[in-house]
Image (cartoon, rainbow, N blue to C red):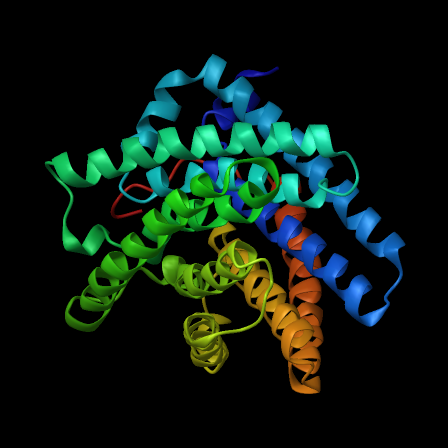
Length: 327
C-alpha cells in the first residue's frame, strides 16, 4: 500500500455503514413485496447477496483502519456528528439478521446477538457522552443523534424470535422514551437556531425512522395481532414526516452529493415496511400502492447513490481529509 493510499484509509468514514442500512432495508422491502405482491423471490436473494457482500467489504476496511489508524477512529468517536454513526454498524447487523432469519436461523441469531451487544455498549457510551459532555453545543445537534435510538427500537423485531420477550420490551421502552426526548430537542434546534450545514440536510430524513421502526417493533411485540390506536399513531406520524420531507425534494436535490445522501435510504425503507404491514393487517389497497411506490423510489435512489459513491471512489473523492476553514 502506498503512502497516499495509507493516508486515505485514515479518512475511511464510519457513516458508510449507512449504505448497508439502506441496502438491507431495501432487501427486507423486497421480501415483503414478494410475500404480499408476488414479485420474484430471486430479486430478494440478489439484494441480500449484495447487502452481505458490501457489509463484509466495508467492515473489513474499517477494521484495517482501526488497526492502522487508531487515532483516526478515536477522533471520529470524539466528533459530535460522526460519533452517532457508529451504531450504523450494529444496526446493519440487526437488519442482516432479519434478512437471514428464514435462510439460516443459527447465523441469523448470532448476528442479532452480536448486533444487540454492540448496540447496547454504544448506547451506554453515547448517552454517557451526552450527559458528561464539555464542549458540545445545541448547534451540534442533528437528526443523526436519532441513530442510537433507532438501533434500540430495532432490537425488538429480532428479539421476538431470538430472545425472551422482556428483552424486546426493554429495548423498545428505551428507544421510545429517548425518541420523544430527542425529538423535542431536535425540533427546538431546527426552529430556533441557525440552519444545519447544507451537507447535513439529508439527515432530516432520519426523523422518519424512529416512529416507522417503532411501529414495526410494536406490531412485532403484539404478534401482528392487529392495528390498534397506538400503532396507528406511530405509523401516521412516520407517514406525515415522509410527506413533509418529500414535499421538500427541490430543496434537497440542491445539496451537493456526499455520503450523507445515504441517510435518505433507510428511513424510506422503514416507512415502506410499515406500509406493507398496514396493508397486510387492514387489507386496504391504498397501503399496497403506497408501499410499492416508495419501494420503487428507494430502489432507484439506491442504484443512483451506489453509482455516485463508486464514481467518488474512482475519482478518489471519498476518503479525503476535511477541508480546513477558509479553503
